Length: 538
Image 1: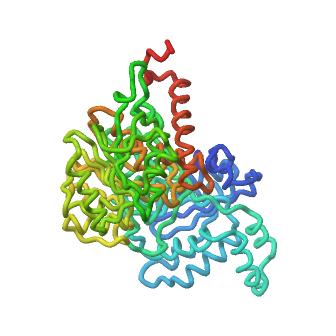
Image 2: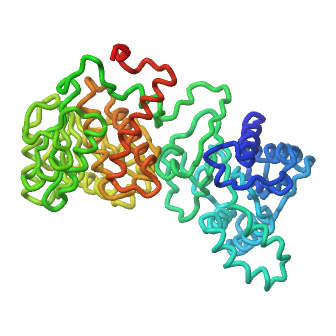
Image 3: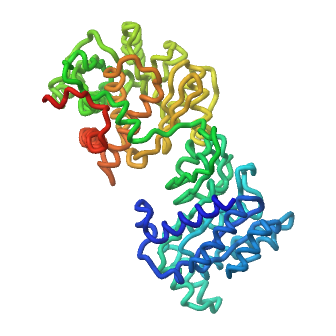
């Protein structure tokens, strides 16, 4: 417990001191310790105990600290240590706990108390890994009340409550301190309260997940923190080693070094064929841009030979954007099919089935958009196939595979559905979303959150298909298709990040080369041996 509590104290102090770069903007101007109040939310059990000991350490460091208990049965030794260090205790929820809780009263009290405290940080130590969500009262009402503040702009909050403060005769200075202070950062102890640690969902409880800006977790992240809503709820993740073995999570997140090592860097002996040939069936009269986006993204990634198999009407657009593209079929190592196609259109179905039936046996295939509606009906996929749906397409895919799921159900639990779809199809599934979830048929799962917030734009999935097509064409004997798909998703996110804040897909594609160049520079600067040694002779 002491190790966990110290890590929570240390990371909170670093964050409020502006020493965690990704949180510096949220923290704002660094104020004296005496002006940076910390509100610590604690429940029963050891997680609450960690919060109490961290509260003690923060108070001893000079921070004004207030503890709000959601249970009358908090950690006794931790509470005693916190009180001895001068920590204030606000007992309102402990008094209202149990069967007779009053959600309205809790909401109003929390609302008023936040205005009074104007906290710089809120530490979430409500429940530990042994507790099962959803949250119960009074913690549920507490989290909902906090979320009403945390998801709102400070300016709108101040306008809404300025009249209330005046009418109640409240000291205007307290209200002013809240209005002028930045939004408090939320620091989660081990994991954000309200998340299902097995699958990353909030179990359907509206507004019942307290999203963190910083999560300090012990040993290793839990599966539910890497997928679904959990992946976007943890914020910046800090892992504290606690000396336990076998804590590898069921879900893997790849790093920049993983991507650098897996990227198919060109070799001195390469030529246009040895680098891999990619065939593309994308773009239609209705969505002609898809053909352009897939081919240009593949070329920007490093493809040396791209064949275009699409409609005559789209060919001039593809050649106009990339005159090096070759029109017509031929030998290739990978095929991208379906982007810009309507799977319910008979003509499109015919083109897709024609490409599928004439593919080479060893070819890797990326099935996107319109091609997904044929899986399980006219197309039987295998372990050399990657399916790339968003949640709506995944619902159609599920139906074709004999499963039933709505878009909403899939969005609520992408981890579960990516695994189900992979098992049912025999293919790897890349389920797009705020946290992209990639599942192999054997149950291996990867999660990619890098840059995904900058990818929500029309045609972004077409760019991803092009990147993936390049990777599959250029990599021989892929042993883990899900891992390679995660590599592509990471580069896609990095390109989105470079093109931010409001990128179009063409901006994302234009950022692919700089993203790969930055990766290459990383390899050189860190003296990694991923590049071909003979490059030195160039």
